[in-house]
Length: 191
Ligand SMILES: [Zn+2]
Image (cartoon, rainbow, N blue to C red):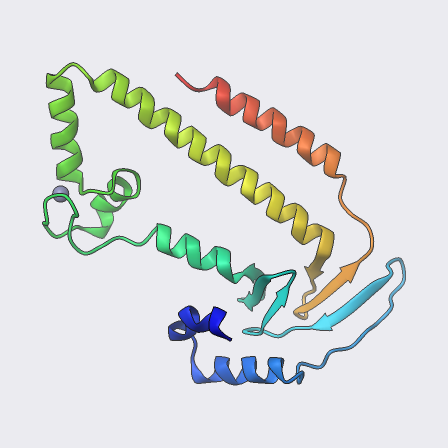
């Protein structure tokens, strides 16, 4: 239970009850067979939380999602109220894109880039920003592909919100080949 403590704030009492039911095994577990697949079936409803191979999953808006991943992504895109650099209040609409990349407000970025131009360092700086963006994108993309492979290998979610598992896997070699090609292309865009 201690692992989910950090997420508790986001849960309503209904969610907690659902979780309690899940832990007590009241989630209507059943095993079924269907034509074409040899599969195990476990029923999960909206808001259920369950763990597979140390990863926590939930169903939100009918979509199976990895809780740990969601939580991390949320934190990465949160913006403080005040700019960490100058302390002025930040505005979601125009400061956000700058905060996401530079961790400071628009004005601070403009000022910083002006200083760099004056010092003749702007070009080198721009190069580094673009390359680090590409590196970040490549990394995200790799993570996305590997988590997709993991999901497809294990299970999929039916329209009724059931998680179905089946034997068989996507053509991993083909996927990895595509991944390599994409990374190669992205690397070629570096300056
Ligand atoms: Zn600022």
